Length: 250
Image 1: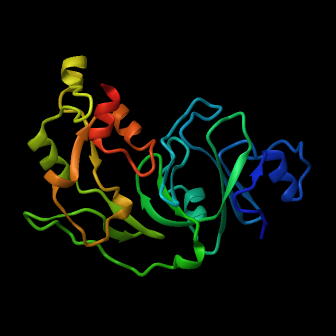
Image 2: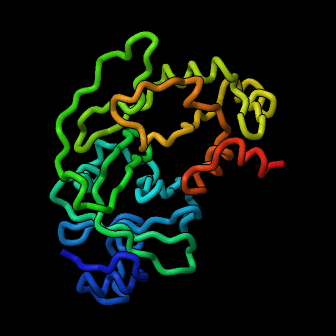
């Protein structure tokens, strides 16, 4: 298994050298965000900034966990994604906040949440001694009981995947309306019928902190926000309150 020091800084050539390659080695996937090498994976993540390709998927720290998004177009059925999530695989995560700086080694990672979206969304934990490598099989209920909204209902994929409840989302929007709770933007006013009803929904308490049996209250726990404000809320650790972001906008 490859060895790196948590908290230390590495350039890509440094990592190649540790992997037994020439520092100037070219080819393969070494210049991409996900590298497979001798049955181990190395992830190079930009946090809070665009990558060299101009993409910014919203990678962010949530406490000691890193919420990370695979490359655009990825989905859970990809063979490469399935391999990345195999319990016996070593996954090394490196991150940085600028394209001009080396990467910091976050550690060997274990996936604790997966969202089966495009791109695939994974929450990585790094205190691997306290995270089980094989999580128990937990089937989600076929339906959410009327009047109850289970946020974080779990279904087994390769690890527990948390499902966001669309019914709870709709209750939130029906109550507050499709205007951003932080900046007041209504997409229909800006984009006409194309933007009618479009809005993100923000969890006042991050979804990663909710247990699998948490009974969500859509009015108390959710707020409609535009994508820009949603991203700004999560640029802070822990996420900013909507009131704090509203004050910053003023």
